Image 1 (spheres, one colour):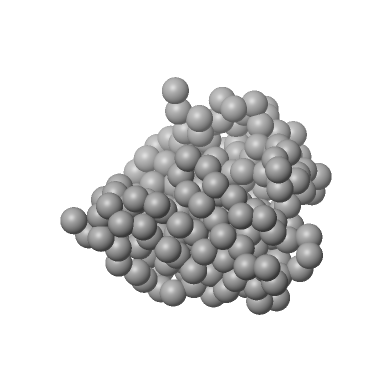
Image 2: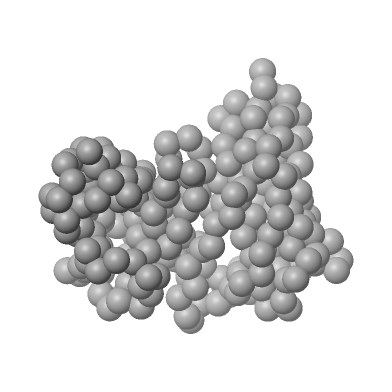
Length: 118
Length: 113
């Protein structure tokens, strides 16, 4: 069973199109994220949702609109795609727990969606 | 969150221990050291974390210096499947709040047969 799944795995599209990427987690976590990994391999946070509410929006263009229909899903819709949007997009969910080192959290990442804009 | 410094790349012979260093000289008292790795074409994977004591789990060991300004991730018997980019991340560890992970460039570990 895949803990965090994303669809599609690959997405090739033309500039100006609108596309969506779906993410689902079956871990029962309350918090989910979208990260973007660009061609230079830098991973950066885009959005964070907690219990279906937007918590973090890291200066992402408003062409990107996350939507969380329920706690298990966080989808990413992108309008008017641009060449610079080409990247790998990772969804993640967050587990919080207490260990010998105190309170902490662990993030579980999906397999990624490679978006190519032509 | 404090910044970290890692060597850009390292090699390790298969079966040997891989020791990956990380400097975090500006770490605050309430910040933890986390390690994640990213195998090619996959999402990042949690490895281990610690505050000030050394930690060990089924994947690795984490050694944190007494002054907490640096740490070392140890993979005791590296295999080819451990070839990946390893990220050392310093951040506040808390259940409340919503601090995302801030990834640096990491260390590209190549395990060689």
